Image: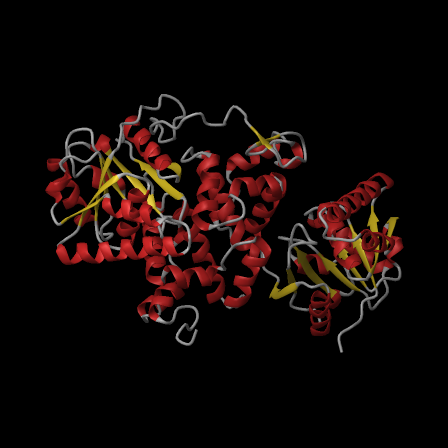
Length: 605
């Protein structure tokens, strides 16, 4: 039988601590809420009442239930008030010496059978536990912010934590309506170990002026379906908190350079730019604590060409050329989707494939997709017929002589793309924008196959192109301002969100996404956690639409391996080396859903 907890103590009533108090009190458990001073206690009380009042206003909590909830909370100054509780959860700042002092005092004050828990997100639970004479009764209970809303709790056991304590706490999580994942004491646990390397990488992109903060955030929200972009999320977490977590993970986690805080982060913390709580971080907010972003001196007016230092210029943008006729080269899924996107936007399209049979297949695929739009009420029959009427079918590149823009969407082989662009260079009229949809190859290599590299740009659509709202505009060091401006205007005409970046492996989305996926595979191959628990952690703890292993099976393990290899070859970062388990699964033919098996068996699903 699991232990029954009737009284719980919470030490530290900041945003997280007050949220934990609310979780317990909502579930009928008496809480002793403790702070260091009267002033801190009143701030904690205000955090709790503010949260519960908002819940009442939004209709998520009845007034009577709010009043009963608040009546279960006993606000006290000093740890001596915890002399009779069954469980204490510490939620003070991420400072090891502070936590150790508190746990030594809790060991003295609390009943001998009481469980002592820390909400640390990055520090060693083991190092906290040795400050007590009861390390077997010390455990990590890592809630996620906001605690009343987020379903995940990471239960962190040390090498000496009692199995009964783990079982009792897991049962308690169930009583609270939480999903628990139980793991051992390792830097960052699951969620932060995977999340913060990605966040740090995004900060590095800003520091190097590879892309703007707005474009990086838009890319990850629209390209991956994430609830927040990485830089907005850093502002929400607090840059000082993020710095401490990264620094701790770097020191505790084998000194992986990807967890070494980017210098810009330390500079911003030193300057007091801490995110929402200070009113300014990567973005500027209406006031300290406000979620409302206001324009500042970094808000871009227009995106111009790549600067001399490789960064994105925000002034001197060229003027866009008119685009009324577009050529699309290729017959795969991406080419088919792009043809549909342009035809539906009222732009004439010339589709070039390798023969009449391929053209017939593309026509059938486009017609089927448009018919689905009609059935679902998203498209009228007349609009469907008009879109199909805008498409011209061809098996020769010569029919692209009078188009204003060509988009190449053939196989990801550099030699094939270079040959096509060399032919386009001879066929197309001067000033035509030549675009490649490559997701991993260097655009400059394609551009230099022509005599007009200033006219060449990457236009990386996301699959399925008619649905996904994002396009990455990839400009090389030879791309002209006019070409970039035209690409942006075209995306706007298609009702797509364009983000502009330099010609680096992975661009924005894949460069941030695939190292995170690779890290998840490494976590699995070390037997730190299961694929199910890792997926749960990222979906429930970070709000991701899919867990990393779900996503890998959808993308295809062979595709993921190829992209990760490209990132590693270009950046030469040891942490980017493909995980051996990923390589082994691909070698074995376990490629994900398309093969019936990847990280999971899909044959009976």
